[in-house]
Length: 82
Image 1 (cartoon, rainbow, N blue to C red):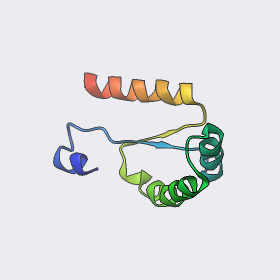
Image 2: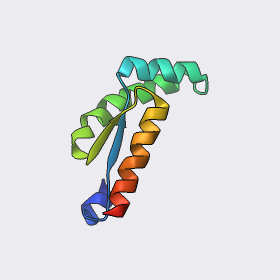
Image 3: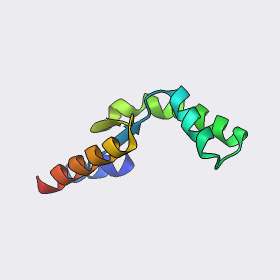
């Protein structure tokens, strides 16, 4: 967002949003790459980050990774072509 504030016309700010905080926690646990303590810290931080989503140009709801990636690709492609 700092870059966006300095270069508003040249920047596309995209927020990737999980379906829910519970789903985010489930996905993090399923990966088995972080301790429960680290996951809990990330979940606490997620609440704060989710509150900032409206400040972004676009919000992608990540219900399905492949769909979210395709949507991100199209957003960036469209932004670059403008």
